[in-house]
Image (cartoon, rainbow, N blue to C red; front, side):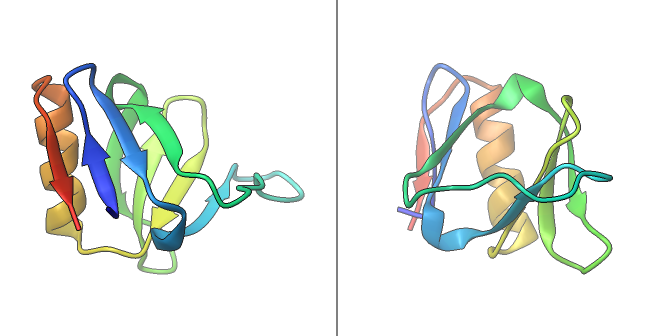
Length: 90
């Protein structure tokens, strides 16, 4: 499982696809200790590419979660999570 969403609009991001979690203008990024990252789809401001060309979830709180996956897959999971349905991308 790389990306997964459930009917509560939660998106699970596997540790193996996370390239970085950071907040712009901060000294260091967040630490992820081998666990999946769980985010609420309602807190995602938009999905795009960052300055390095990586697919990135831009969060309302200012964090950027960069992942190693295709844009279409991330967009699919985001859209399905916003609809309150379940899906998984392996």
